[in-house]
Image (cartoon, rainbow, N blue to C red; front, side):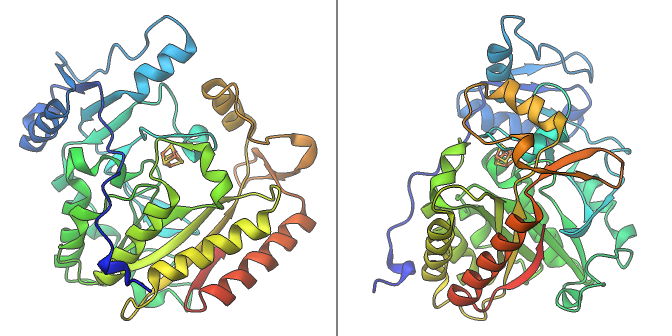
Amino acid sequence: MLHPDALPPLRHHRLWRPKRVLVTRGARAFPRALAMAERAAALGAEVVELPNDRLTGLASGESPAADYRLAKNTMAIVVASAAKRRLQPIPPSADWRFDLAEGCPAHCQYCYLAGSLAGPPITRVYANVEEIFDGLAAYVGQGTVTSASAERSGEGTTFEASCYADPLGVEHLTGSLSEAVSFFGRWDAPVQLRFTTKFADVSPLLGLEHRGRTRVRMSVNAAHLIRFEGGTSPLPERLRALGQLARAGYRVGLTVAPIQPVDDWRTGYAALFADAARELAGAPDLDLTAELITHRFTPKSKGVLQGWYPASKLEMDEEKRSRKLTKFGSVKHVYPAATMKEMRAELTGLLGRHLPQAKVLYWT
Ligand code: SF4
């Protein structure tokens, strides 16, 4: 068998090219913002310097579809305010959530951001990255997620950077994720940076001094569900990238999401784990986790997603789901208990067979 390192480099990464970049006045005080704008301009973006810090011109006024297209082609370079820099706990993924960006240029018909971010789906990237990093130290040792898990206690306090964005999807424009990896690598405290991604261009990360302080998870799904993930990297490229990261010494993981019992799902997930095992074969000291997340929706996320993708064939039928109340009292629609039990047993069994090294962090 050809060793994955002997394969030619991947050349088909889909790098996002925003058509328009808005730069707020506040952001222009940070040299990093200008560097980001220059990178976008070099890729053909029109750069608009706003007179103040208010984002304007976000709607075309033509139609919802035109508004969506305009937003998804827009990047805004802004300053993360003090309120945005206050961290939130984010169980079960990590102790704390912090953000380098907010929004994502891809077009996943089950995007988890639909229920959490309001307004037009533009991508905001933050210019004050050093201020964001400076705010993290106060949270070291404060988390409750990692320390409560025997399997994860060796990871230190965990900081999740992909709750409101896919930070690798904009890395070619921002460079912020590489800065974060290097920052955590230099940090002399028990900490870990975590992020999950559907993008495969990991080349900026491979040579960094990460010192094992970063866990990169690839967000993956059964191959026949990837058609719902417009604008992301193809699944084989994501798995290949995960192998490259593992061989570069990164801790790695699979975020399997959103799991759905579509036709032939057993075969689909078996093939996924077999392919992942092939790409990870031979990685020295492999440290691999798996996070298993089933599909769910809320009335709000369903409404937003149906507005964005009116022709989508994604199943969001309340009749086929169980109602569950969140801790905030709102409703979410999940698979019935018997389906959940069946899928959980099957996927954990398949993982054990194909990737016995994987630590399953949670099923939800
Ligand atoms: Fe949403 Fe992630 Fe898809 Fe981006 S890659 S659209 S954040 S689900």
